[in-house]
Length: 282
Picture (tube, rainbow, N blue to C red):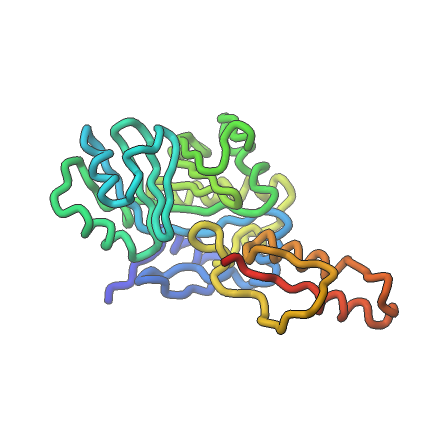
């Protein structure tokens, strides 16, 4: 099988990234220090290369009809809004233009749903790059990268817009935890470098700590389960509902800082860690 390269393959080589094959794409797994990269994800900001995601554009008067066949309900969303299911998300960019993102490899199943397209359909997977910007300080990076007001009270989760970041035209999709930046593949390296420069300017220290390994994947979920199964106890000091990044970060913070007054000091650290159990959402 032909292995496809990320538009950041040159960045990977220059910064000694450890790579892994993902659905036929050679993607960065980490940049040499996964623990530090995960800490940056929790405390500052990270860029993740998601260029392997499927990308399909639809244009023309019948674009909404074609989009509906691929993702149910897509024809009913308003301009600059989105609709997602378990594997894909539809962006309605104008009345007659859509961009569909899908989990890597799933674009073919979307295309199979549309045997006779009535609009101009282009599989853009190889022609477009895609970055995910995550972490609590990602807003600072965006503020210094565009003149557009991207405050979260104005651009809410689920919104999509088209803007320019460092002279590169981007489609920006906002979720609760991430900002997804879709752009022309040709400009991926220059956009990456520009975002890195901004990150360093607001207090980050290097490519390896501002870039993240694949701790986050489609729709902001962890790539693997990071909690253990335990027998249920009769009572807990703290119960955290939700298995996402924020839930895990909260559990980690409380396990490090919470002190139970009912425990002897010699037993507090290990006991507090033991009572913090993460329960995934059903």
